[in-house]
Every structure is written in structure tokens, then in C-alpha cells.
Length: 427
Image (cartoon, rainbow, N blue to C red; front, side):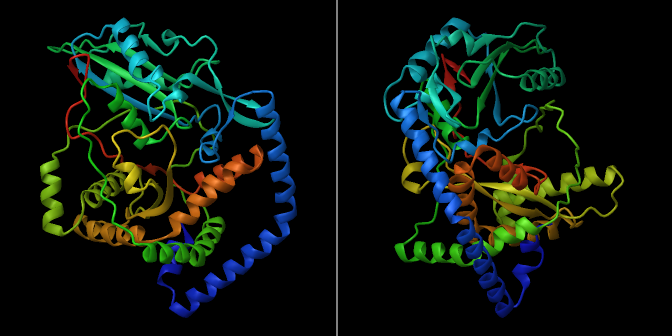
């Protein structure tokens, strides 16, 4: 359990202030002790960059992309997606369309990452052009028996998404899989892409670029922040962030889904169609948001599962909630570049609350505190600017240490308001 959420938010103001001051003092001492080593390491990194540039070995990855390469053989940071289209998809036409609209498209924003692979030179991760780029290696037909129902499709996807990608190519692929569902003529298009290429917001822009007509995307409404408010948020992050970071470092891991070692086997599934109108009605009557209602449903489903496994009184579960850090100006653009601009915060999902209405009220309270917090700034800075610049073995240790504090990741990416349409077919 995160000590910060469990105890410190409810601490008296004077005690909370003393704890914040103590945390700042402790991290300052730590920074002073490590500053000489950091300075020497930065010189070494500068020298590495000079060598990579001089010998034209590629382009060094941005520090915010590097943490997504802190992975293991059995737990890759791939983003998996599934689209189902009506009718049969011509593989040759699909390859030509992807080449023309994305791979060979030199307009802004650039999608050059789709033609590059990630390699290590001089102990740095660099983008390097894929030699003799061949779209056939990235977009290919499924060879096997077509799934005849949703259960078989989920099993097939689990097997495909558990397999490694091909070596020596840019880390993305699209699998075209004809479906044999009763009374339906449909094709499944399965896409895998490494998180280092881009986050969810960037991939929505990528999908939109592939479409025949620009789909209408749900715009994220961020509050307009004045320079004064922004300064207050920054100062709040500076004053309270060190305590939040220290409390996470000192917290114990309480994961109800323990695993000694990752197997590498993915389990792909999805829910049945959700009645969004019912969710909107609930949020209107309770004065909450769609996210509040859906998070409450997630907490309830986990509670029922844990009770079915013999836990009569499940405790709250600590999860990670992702946060998009792009400015409203960037989000208002028609196309978003392939980049990673996201961070996250630890959040206690109210699984321990039995009554659904009380659980919704508690979820809203915690979500409101979550939104007003400035801790995401300090966590985002640490994750993208510090972890991504550390020596690889230390960066991996830091990433794994953060990951062990949460049981799952909750992410919400705004989708299109109109159907995707490619090659005259709706997705």
C-alpha cells in the first residue's frame, strides 16, 4: 500500500509540512552525494553522443522513450490492438496503402519511426534505418485455421501476441486474419507496436492517418491554466513531490496477484458491448464522470473475482493510472507525432468498499484528489528525465522497482466519434 495515500494525505498540516521539509532535505543530501558521479556520467554520455554522431550510427533515443526499453524477454512493452472490418481485406492493397499514407509519408508530423529499428551503440539506444525496408515483413497474412467464434479469436490472439517479433526490423507488425464467424464476412486486423515508438495518443493519430477520411476524434478538454496557476502547480510539485517519491520508495508491495516469474504468455480478452447511455445516466444522477463510473465497475469486478478466490474482505488494490502530458495546443492538432508524452501516478482502487454507490462516491473523492495533485509532474520528470538517462542496468532496476508497486495499469485514450474507414470498409 502506498504510504502517501494511506497516511500522509490525512496528516495534520503541521506534520505534513515537516514531513515535506524532511523529504526535501533527505533528497538534497542524496543529490549532493551523487552529484560528482552524475557529472562524470553526463560527460561520458556526451562523449557517447559525439561518437554516435561522428560515425553516423543513428539518432539517439529521447530520454522519455528509453524507459519503455527496460523490459524482459517475457514481458515486452508492446501495445496490442484489434480491428474487425467487414468483408475480405486484400493484403497487397493494404500494404500499398500503409506504405503511401504512413511509411513513405514525409509530411508533418513525421512517421519516420515506422522505418527505423532500435539498436544499441556505445551503450546507448539509437534509431537506425531499417536496411532494405520491406513492408512484407511488417504486414502479413495469418497462416492457420480461421477462428470460428470469439473464444477461438481470443485464444489465437493470445498466441500471436505472446510470440516475439522478428529481429532486425522496426518493432511493429500487422497481422491480417480472415474470420469464419457464423453468418458474418469479416476480417481481423491485429496490430503490435513497441511502446518506444509512441504512446496511445500518438497511435490514435497514426490510425487516423491510415483512414480514407479523417475521423472525428474526441478532443480532450484540459482546463486553461494561467501562468500564475502553472507556477503554483510547479511549486506544489517541488514542495510535495519529494515526500510522495520517498513514500513510494519506502512502501511495501501488496499485490493480490503475485507471480514469481513472468511466463511471457499473454491472455487477450474483452468485455461485451457496454451501454454508454446507461453510464451517462449514472454519472448525471450521481454528479460523477464517465471515468469515475468505469473505475468503480473495475473495482467491483476485481472485488467479485478476489472473493471467488477465497478472499472474503479484499483490500484496496494499488494500480497505476496513466496521464497524458501533452498541452491542449498539441492535442488540438489534426495529427499528433509519434512520441511518448505520458506519465502516471499510483492510485488506490477502492476494491475494499462493498456497497456500489459508496464505492462510486469514494472513487470520485479519490479521483478528484488525484486530478488536483501535482505529484505527476515530479514522477513524470523522474521517469522521463532521470530514469531514461541513467546507466541501463540502474535504469532497469528503477523501472522494475516502480512497476512492482502496482498490480495493473489503467489507461484511457480518447477514441474516434465516427467509424474508421479504410479501403472503403468500416473498422
